[in-house]
Length: 228
View 1 (cartoon, rainbow, N blue to C red):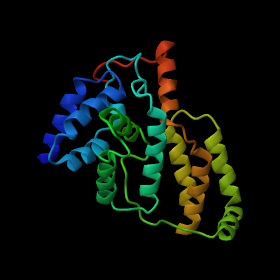
View 2: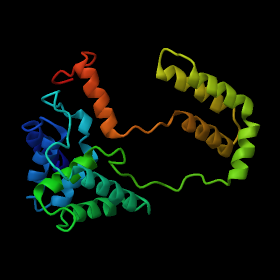
View 3: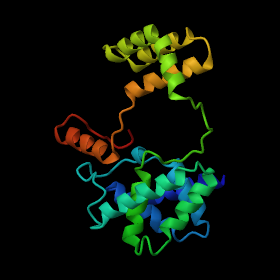
View 4: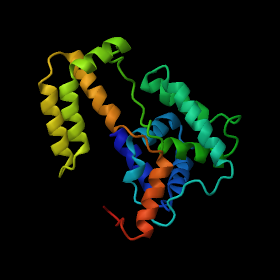
């Protein structure tokens, strides 16, 4: 019930000021910073409200960095703060607690504008929401290469599936899963999926994604209707 109340409060203020991602964050932070349970509200905003689920009122104003001349330095600082925090794989509670401390640190963010810029960068950061991860499978490179060589025929087929034109992503995924089912052993299967990920994981910065969206809108190739 408490989560529903927080969600309703945040969505209500964001939807009244959702011209850009920055103004949405400005509205959210205006609410959050006044709350006695500030950390809980901030955590909920970053964890449970997806920036791309918010309808931007003015499609021509999808930039979020126009109102702060120090935005570039804040963006760089945000990247370093998040990198430093997640490098030790802390608990989710510890992560959001520290984020709350950082945004309230007047030496880092001396005014409301810089705090909003920091929150905007966090909201658009692909590493947010944060999750504490298990260690996963670690493997020496020599062993990894040996398994790659053993799986070579299957990897060639996987490479073809990844490269050829197919009708749907689900079609491609199901074909890859069939290959994985032929592999005996978790380690070998893990190496197979590591290879697949290495072929498909291309990192695109959030600002580049926004530029692509803006270009598509300006060329009439994309239209965002309220409620979609």
